[in-house]
Length: 85
Image 1: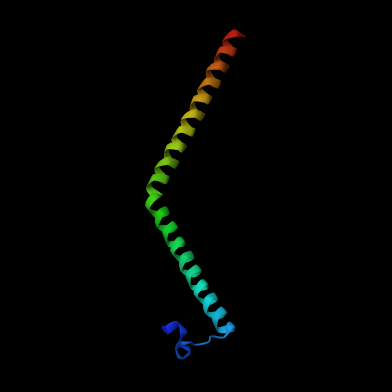
Image 2 (image 1 turned 90 degrees about the vertical axis):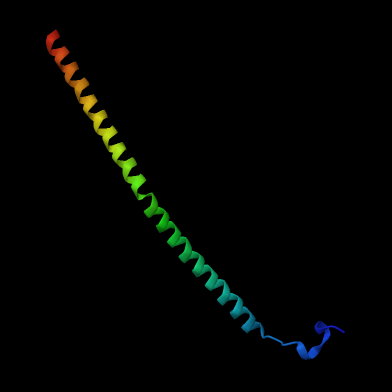
C-alpha cells in the first residue's frame, strides 16, 4: 500500500485552524498585491511626469494663442464697425 493509505502519516487539522491559515494567506497575498500596485502606479506616474508636464505646457500655449487670436478678431471687427459708422 502507498503512503496515502497509511493512517500514521495522516494529521487531522481542525476546521478553525484550516480557515485561519487560508484567510491569513489570502490577506497576506492581497496586502502584498495592493502594495505592489501602489508602488508600480507611483513609479509609472514619476516616469511619465515629464511627458505630462510637456503636454500641459503645450495645451496652455495653444489656449493662450487661441485667446489672443479671438481678441485680435474682436478688435478688428470692432475697428471695422467703427469705420462703417
